[in-house]
Image 1 (cartoon, rainbow, N blue to C red):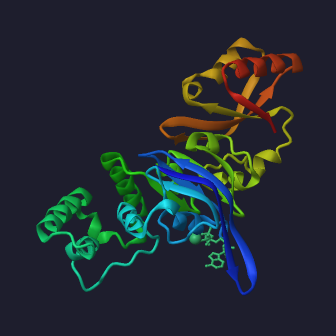
Image 2 (image 1 turned 120 degrees about the horizontal axis):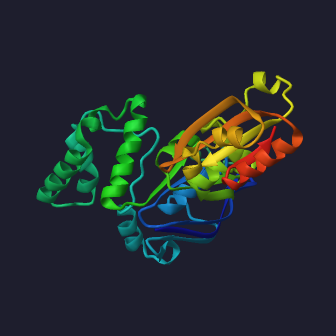
Image 3 (image 1 turned 90 degrees about the vertical axis):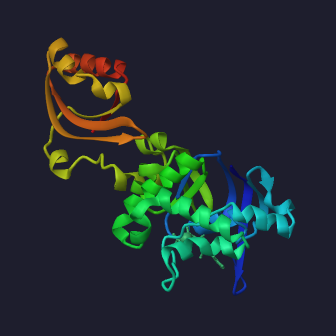
Length: 298
Ligand SMILES: Nc1ncnc2c1ncn2[C@@H]1O[C@H](COP(=O)(O)OP(=O)(O)OP(=O)(O)O)[C@@H](O)[C@H]1O
Ligand SMILES: [Mg+2]
């Protein structure tokens, strides 16, 4: 469990003050995978460095496993740090050593007995499988994400993940926060943020993972009654468009659509043209709304 309470971080560099974190409140439950997304310079690294005390907040509190890091002695901080793993985007392995030795190194550094090291490393390498040998290949990002998910599920390990890539967040996170200029400007379940991003920044990130934009060629068609319908979960399985065509005196023309899955729930959007008299179109839209489908006139 990780909790940030009103965390501020001010760097002083060359007589200038840089406000890297501006009052961060964030709560990550035990066993949760929480993604922090933001553009370069938003404060992501600073935030994560406050979790393992590589940086001390200028103000506010950081709790790890329920303990206020500021109140701990140096020895206690070392003990907490041992329970925190950092996976860097560009991690370094010791080339001259075997995979076994690389995994054993941190345990040896904290003077773990040899027999215990052997048992622990064998268990971990067995868990990881052969992937450990190929982990340096960028194509294996997907494999690493799957591995993180397995670590999270099997050992109930809490993960705070920082990224620029919405696809990464979409793949494995339970919740996400969007950070900008040291502030969390939007947060929630992956489903909520991806299906209805509120801020422009969140929208632009979501767009890179789910493209619900209507192609220009379709926008140019000069269609009179063009609607974007967003459907979620249960409503995705319903033949609502054929129902509309049957129940009302309208023609339905499907122009564009995408369906994806968020946290195991289908989520999609469809752009349709409705042809018919205004009254019939109005009644069709009412019916669609009652089916819990969001409508946006284009
Ligand atoms: N040691 C430092 N001294 C002075 N300023 C710093 C220091 N570290 C970070 N900053 C500044 O704090 C702000 C937040 O930086 P941070 O590295 O946390 O951003 P980030 O979101 O991780 O960016 P990136 O995506 O590029 O890694 C930036 O304006 C950065 O220039
Ligand atoms: Mg960074």
